[in-house]
Amino acid sequence: MITITDTAQDYFARLIEQQDEADLGLRISVNQPGTPGASCDLQFCPAGQSMPDDRVIAFEKFSLYVAHLSEQWLERAEIDFEEDATGGQLTIKAPGIKGSEPAEEASLEERVQWLLETEVNPALASHGGRVALVEITEQKEVVLQFGGGCHGCGMADVTLKQGIEQTLTRHLPEITAVKDATDHRSGSNPYYAGDSQGESAI
Image (cartoon, rainbow, N blue to C red; front, side, top):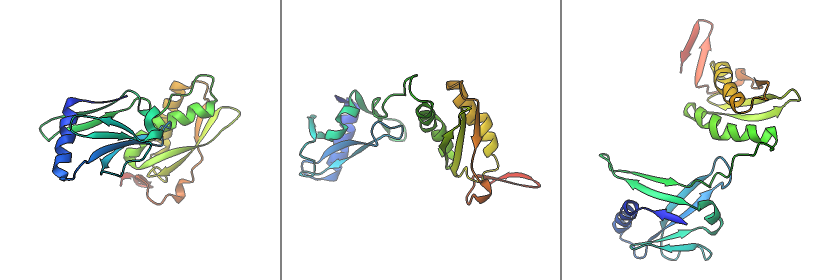
């Protein structure tokens, strides 16, 4: 079910040895499974603190406890550790945890929501912002609400037209327009602000 590469096993074995705690293992679970915001949670699991219905996978130097409700989402997951000059990078690849992209016959709302969570909001997160779907009109206009660092941002219109609208219409050509329902005058912490003399980054 879950593969842990030899380099990752060695890495975990070293970490566990440093803790100097008998029978210390690892426990993995999935937060928000089946959604675009799903993520893996991997933690130390002291002896006696696993759950009764956890699945136990025994490796040579430690045991991995898999949360029962997370098992189906962790099929074909792989945990790897790549050493580099700075120490190394641990990666967890779990292709099934976010669920599947909505089918073509799914509602336009479902497909727009999927794109917002998987493509648009991850890009906006670097500015501390995000958008939420307000409605889709009968004319297939997508109406969005900006939040976070995008609320009150002087570049919101550029982001909407050159970024979000292009992303959505590229995947969903039936969309006729993307509109902003946000009152940007009430934004309290915009990532980018402008004034009558020009615009400047914050």
